[in-house]
Length: 247
Ligand code: 13P
Image (cartoon, rainbow, N blue to C red):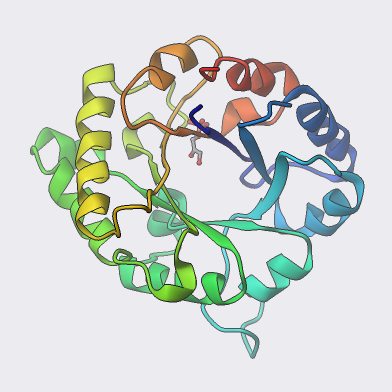
């Protein structure tokens, strides 16, 4: 049976009162083979981790610094995320690449720190609308992947790739099934070239995923789940996506 992964990226949303929502997500998303990762804002992580005790629900951070500790006001390290109860971290989200000027090289330094701290890294890749219009989408995604793959020994078995076309994030525009299929095939082949045959890297799709389009998206080859933004904030909109995963 295929294992799927559904990741809730709460972005900069959620206060202590919203932990109840995470409990409703965890209670409503049980399946022997599918996993859920909730990535709340960092200040909620430790409180959530003391409350959530579900076997198939994990917690993740949304970013980390590349150093273990030091004079980096406002930042947090991968070790701190792990200490607060996280098992995963999202790195290289397009909002961080755009608003914090993160390069693929910096994202790789963060990934190495995260692997050292024992976290599983979810690396986000994706082209902008103009890059797609210029026909450069695989070149862009290939460059973003090249900075992070091959995976060092410390990260073996602990990398997830999330393909999020920038133009589909928060816009209500979902990529066509054929566009998702082509890019996931490209990422799958890219990973295969750099992996031992027994390893595989889950490839998530992200960008305006909701309960209406989820079944279609999950039917595309090499889609191992989704990275969900807006629809992940409420159990009412997130749990039906989980229940759209193939059995
Ligand atoms: P939306 O699901 O709100 O489009 O966000 C996608 C995303 O950026 C998840 O990381």
